[in-house]
Length: 437
Ligand SMILES: Cc1ncc(COP(=O)(O)O)c(C=O)c1O
Image 1 (tube, rainbow, N blue to C red):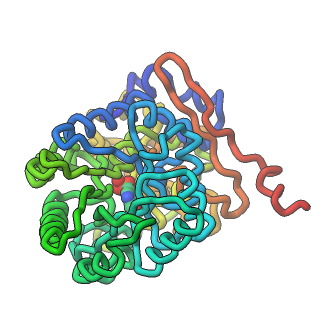
Image 2 (cartoon, protein in one colour):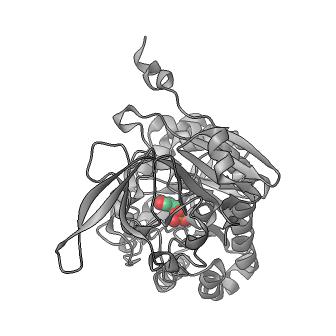
Image 3 (cartoon, rainbow, N blue to C red):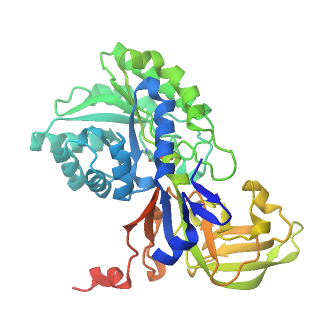
């Protein structure tokens, strides 16, 4: 499902990652255009019967060059801030393909989105509706709103990325939705004619989507009985990416569950919006990092007894890729040049090959949560070796920070025969510039 392959050392499309490290340095995010486009196309094909507007979720991979590739393919954008709106517009996204979610839109951001003439505000609360409507009236700009409903569905994912349960801050309790339409559904400037859902991310089962969509459809009927027309249903994002091995359903599996629920309604004119991020971008990127030091340490064996382990200290850490520290997320990590005995056929096999060493792959940050992988078995590593952290194209660079005053990494795009720097490495001078008046 991606264009990163060992032939015999790791290549992105036809480019050895070793060469990319020499040319662009490390740590660097490397993206494959073919993989990005392939995932977008598979998703679009799987849902084609619904003719959805696919709005790529900018937060997953905000680089404007990535956005431009998708916008050229017909994608819209899902944004959650003025910064993301700006990026979506710079990427060339037509404003009528931009939807804007998020519980904390500021007046300045709302103003900018109204002036840009975006398609939908995904509305997260009553006071937010009133704020957007009043700014729209003042600017004399008519716009449209989708009520983000909280369907009280358990997506069975990490608590921090679960967004559709009753106790979540997102959306409006579905039990309050009819009242919401009765209060606000006749506004002239903010026309409320859509529903929005986003239940969590990543969601590895189709059942929570079925549950949430059925609740939304029942609500649409209830609203219709009260003469409120819902013309658009935005299903949000959350489709999984293959971090491990074949754990996640494919786009076609999600579509097989979702399309039959919406087929008839779509045929009668219901417009469907999807907001995928991770399922398009995650496997299109790896994080390339160099080993700074290897040192001996101790871990705990299955019986709790101390066992020797290596700390592989890299130039990338939680500042570069936060997901392991924040969510205990799994990313497959493997050397770029593992040697002939260590080229696994499948990722799962990589943990059981003879000659491997128990390792923690860690970064330079002064926190014990600063790790990329814990208690993994890797071929013997040495100073200067390169490691690839896979499935890092989504929520990788977008969550990177300058903690401990390390500059942000570079981003490189591989496009067939050519490669291009799509974001230069942040220099120390860039870091301190805003403090030097
Ligand atoms: C409103 C909304 N839409 C879409 C997404 C994208 O989710 P994913 O990248 O899992 O597809 C998110 C992610 O948090 C979100 O909050």
